[in-house]
Amino acid sequence: MIEAIPKIFVLLFSIILHEIAHGWMALRNGDPTARDAGRLTFNLIPHIDIFGTILLPLFLVLVQSPVLFGWAKPVPIDPRNFRNPAKAIGLVGAAGPGANIILAVLCALLFRGAVAFGLITGPGFAANMLVYGVAINIILAVFNMVPIPPLDGSRVIVPFAPLGLRRVLAQIEPYGMFIIFGLLYVGFFRFVISPIYVYFTRLFLGF
Image 1: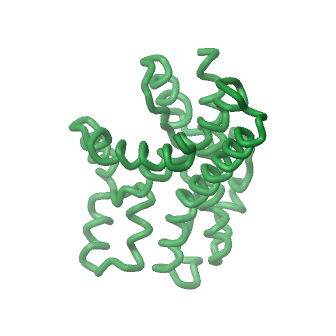
Image 2: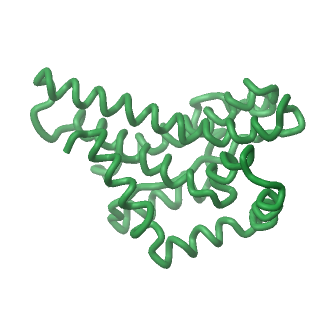
């Protein structure tokens, strides 16, 4: 548990940043709902989802999962406030994974820079935090871009999707989490997401 504390800290910061990015992009497109609900804050409490923020990460730590994953409570968004709803939904959806990619890049640059200047010469707290920052944010970005509601990938494709596909996505959204966990159970993560995650983590970190 003590060894897992840095991972949990990075995960919490990353998923909160993810949700803040959604709310910020919504605000940029005319919807102040997240701001008015007090969700554009790094204060952990308004973002806590009991299962996704606490129970699931704790369970993954206890079973020594090689991947740490979780989510915060989704920020409230009212599409009726958007100036261009279809475009805005896509931008809001992309903002969360985009924020995670930016954070992963920043951590990778800091890691590579510290190694190049001799500030990091081996495993240690600083090195581990930066590596976790890259790995956790890449997995959050990759997983969330799966185009199954309520994941962000389903929002990103809205501006380009024909009306029929939009209706299908809306119809399956109430069952989306069951579909996602079902895919994970049959090995979707291992065969599809994991290779992408491993490739980009190695690319960013240089090993």
